Amino acid sequence: MNLRIGNGYDIHRLVPDRPLILGGVTIPHELGLDGHSDADTLTHAIMDAMLGALSLGDIGHYFPPSDSQWKGADSLVLLDQVHQLIQAKGWQIGNIDSVLVAERPKLKPHIEAMRDRLATTLKVNPDQVGIKATTNEKLGPTGREEGIAAYTVVLLMPN
Ligand code: MG
Image (cartoon, rainbow, N blue to C red):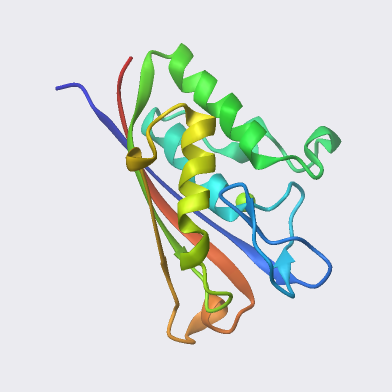
């Protein structure tokens, strides 16, 4: 069977006076993620995995931070564009599996909403979008609450 697999990783800094947006869902927290776009690290990791599966480079190539049109961009809009690109190349999402690494806030109560938003954007069933959340046991930058990281694998199937 003709299948392609891609992996993606992203991390953004936690800072005051920014919203915390993960998987297109705004999560109440005293800190948010810093970045040129909305800094949705989960959605960025998913886009990189989709592009990586087809050796199409990374999101920095398509949406460069140097381009002011992406300032504050809704990452779900960018995800839709990446999805259209992979569809145009003849591929569709098989499934996605992601891990979010955050010490705080508790992400588990928001995971179903993230799965729904991502699945709606990608026009797939929520059961094709797996998201898990873990802490980093207070180790490293995520464990010190300096940032939130995301790891993703995506399997693509022919359209
Ligand atoms: Mg990013």
